[in-house]
Image 1: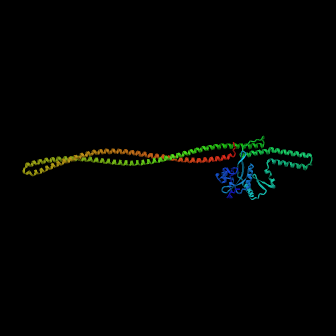
Image 2: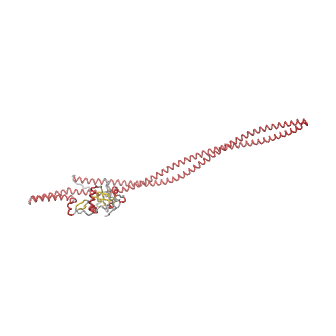
Image 3: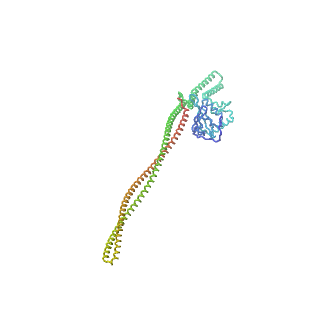
Length: 517
């Protein structure tokens, strides 16, 4: 027998509502275990699946207990007894186990065990019994279908624990006949009337016993057969009794409980099939959603890459626009400075023109003075000629004065000519300056317009950059949502897969009671 080690002295206490159930094949390999069984064993479902059921066997369990169990199960009966199991970590727990052979079409297809919590008193009794069995100290008793009975010469003490009801009734009848005959033979002498009376009583007792067997034992056997069929998952034949007493109503109750259970199992099977179909549809939808999310994520990544390139281009344009704005502003300042300088030149030219006119007036005065001086010199020369020798020296002076006056007049004419040329040049320059001023004003206007356009472009570029930033944020949000949807779809697929596995597990558990159609 398999011995599982190591073990500890720590008892694992079961919840009072726990029902540990497992289903095995005919060679005792686990095909199903409920959550209570899995939790109590300390293993995972995957660790238990397809493993021999003795994976949870404790070394303190005597081989005789399992030998009795297999003998009972092979006889097609239900075995019930105390079992000590080992957990994965070496701890132990006690249960009261009921094992039923599962039948389909008259053949054993597996075994189902249901275990419940037991009291400490029952644990102490079972531990003491199993210790005696392991130590070979149980001399006159043995296990029989989960019960402790006497063996050998003391076997008769357990007779009424194991004989069928029909033989229990017959034994009572036989005892009654023997007791009655012994009384008659003791109280009355042997005679034909006494013999006839004894035979009558014996015959009546035998008939009564057989009637009791017919009306009690046989119906109870049929009820037991029906109950075992229901417990082992076989189809009910709905055998009925033509009676409404306790036995008849008991059979009706057994039949009805079997039909109720069968209807429930059929409904559960139907719902499980619908759930399985729905799970497959949801799984297919999740797969499609996951693929679409992946496609969307790829498209969003491409879009995000394009958006990044476009954002970089717009930022570059914005930088260029800002640089153009600064250049336009600098040009505007330069043009304004040039316009101011032209205005200053214009003012200077006007002042020079005004000064030239004043010089011309002064030259005219000098011309008049030269003319008058020349006249006076001529007059002085005439007077000197009239004076003769006395006026000769004066005539020389007058002649020199006249020459100087003529030179002054000629110099004034030359200066006037130069001044006129200068004034003409100033007028020409003034026209050029005015034209330059108009050009500078036009340039200033154009520069201001360019500055406005560049500012508008810069503002539009800034707004585009902000808009692209918002679009990029939206794309990132959509990408994050898509990623979350992908994760949710993955989690949903995992949940659906787990649900399908649980549905399949439930289907396997329910299939134990399913009737082949």
